[in-house]
Length: 137
Image 1: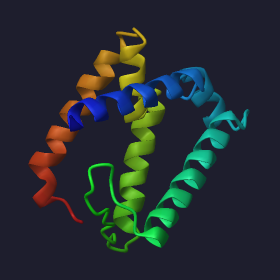
Image 2: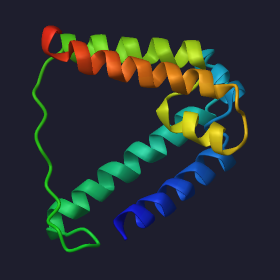
Image 3: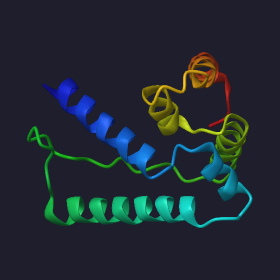
Image 4: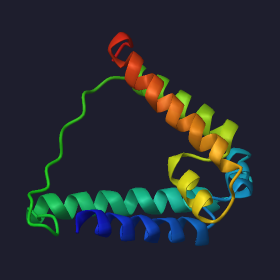
């Protein structure tokens, strides 16, 4: 049941990403060139919606649809690791023209050359898993 629900939510997320043009390489290019507010508006809306949702969950002590308590684990503070991770993520995003969400959206929309990026993302994730204990955190 949970897998089916997650699949439906994922499909809805993909449709929203596609229809809002958040998966469009041209929109991402415009964003990195500071030529359009489109992507910043989408990201700002997502941050505002997410922050509001977290605030409501904490304020009303809400539970998941399955009745499980929703817990938030505090993140360790630091600058170097978040800066290094952000730079690597941004570099990959700029090179590939897609972050993880749009990769799945573009595959679902039938843009199969993005499978090369998907395979690269899987290999990068695997490599991180192998090297994780040797990297500074």
